[in-house]
Length: 404
Image 1: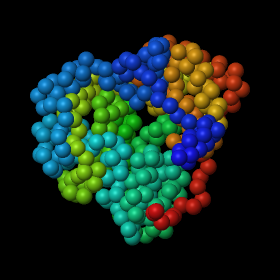
Image 2 (image 1 turned 30 degrees about the vertical axis):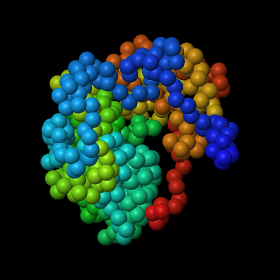
Image 3 (image 1 turned 120 degrees about the horizontal axis):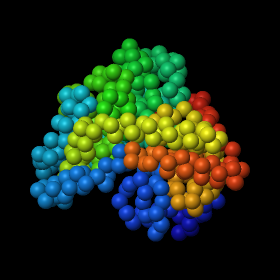
């Protein structure tokens, strides 16, 4: 049928076609991409733990003891001790009563938001939240108020308008495409003043912000006080899966009504074992977190010295906003010609007119490599006549609407 071919043609014409690039090595600061070694500047493996020997060995040991797979949902075939052990460790790490594992960060947000709000209620979402939070709000069937990015006055106005129907505020901690940080303390105060809960997605903040890398909530001094914290195992912790930390009562509710938890096979034991080992490394080696912060600062400074600004980022995520999707892809390919893999991010991942290179550093990147990459990207941008911008996307005017 032509509809599929036509849609693919439309994507190509708009500069939005995507293809998978072949990696033939472990994920590290350098990888083998399509047969050539390149500097990797687009991974979420922020502390380099995905290829850490202790993490690899822990995955192998878990496979030997518990097998390659979990067999079924934990409510069907039982709660394996290795899953229970990781949940206890995560809850203790974040300062909460309980934690619950999910198959991915997307599933965790989808299931948690839709379990906590529904028809007749209002959920409040930052306009730059990750797609998983956006989709969780959509399927909840609650009314959605999309507030301007980190705009507390706009959110407060929405809370007043919603009145007693306000149920949940959801936000990324570190915004994944911009690298800026949500005002966690102020959001929490607004939520509690207006009688609703707050959920913070710490996917990119665990291992990079807060004391010993405990995240943005801990950085704000609110560990255990924010109602729900979502985190992933597949970024800083180098494995796969996700978790929600909350009170015992909320976790009990999620266990009973969160559909992605109920109807998904549990995480494979090797992934759980790897995450346990990675969490132990993070707790015992906090210097890795500081090294990551320093590398982020090094890359931002090097880009600025070469005429490229990284906007409001103060983290390991460093965006170079180009604007046009095709230009962003051209800049990506020029960088790759120089053996630097910096992925172009285009709509629908970012708003129209804000396509970019999303650079992300790792703790085990070398400072000299980061400076050389900044010079290369800046030179390629100049050759292409690319003008960069630090301006954010336009704010939506329609902020209160019925869920589809």
